[in-house]
Length: 199
Length: 199
Image 1 (cartoon, each protein chain N blue to C red):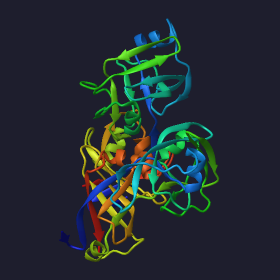
Image 2 (cartoon, rainbow over the protein chains, first blue to last red):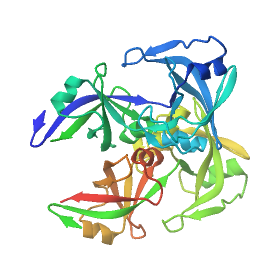
Image 3 (tube, chains in turn orange, red):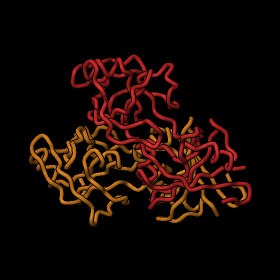
């Protein structure tokens, strides 16, 4: 694991396709009063799930259907898109960590019972790696710092820098990429990468 | 330019969105007899152009409209898609260099005067770098070898390996990425990268 001046560790890759975390108020407008999301699959983060429900997003240039919702509802609406999605919609969203929504663009969201024009909340997710405090300690990294990740695929080898470290007790070691990043690296959900930390 | 054991050179980035090179026979079926493509923009390769005309692609899972045609017509139909495009269509195309079409999947192509189901010809373009024989000599690289390219963007820095060198007298130094790769790196057409050759 250790060599001259650097540590490395094998890490699972999780690929996030476009999705939205919506507030209870927005969900009511899209699905009707007292509507509850149905769990499709539990995520690795405790209590988080991808829902059966999807919505459509409408931008100035185009529309994306079947955009997956995540649950449970959040305090603020947040829509995470790849740059490819944004180009299709005609939206330019900044690279942000989850929850950092100041100054982000909005989008029109269409559900089966109504539609809502969100004033903001659209981001391109900054690539990041989840880890437990124990993993962080053994690697000598802090929350918020950036690391590099090497991916050895068949014909699309690359090294991602600017991978932000996110530490929480319930996080398992997992690299989160969006679909553009996963496709550029020739990997899919469940593949592995090599986390590299220069000491 | 040179440092211990490695050479580097600044290189222009050209981003290729999904597009198709079609044969004269296929163009006739899609646009009618004696139809000629209209030049929209001349490309850096002499005599090559992107056309005013677009087609739709129909796969088992979805459809992509406004897919740009390139001219002049070629001997063989070739459709170049990003992995994101392939997922939208429901097609799995291999990573190939242009012209290497054996065993590739097909797709249905729809034009204003008819449609054609291509039996093969769909590829994901292998990332590559064009250069003149003079540039190749000064860098000490051969046609077909792979090099690395470093991209310094704002928050999506990365290094692409597996970049294939293509040498021809009319090639100017240019890195060709597809939209997934450009988006993962946070760059667009006309940005620059740093070509790195280890000696």
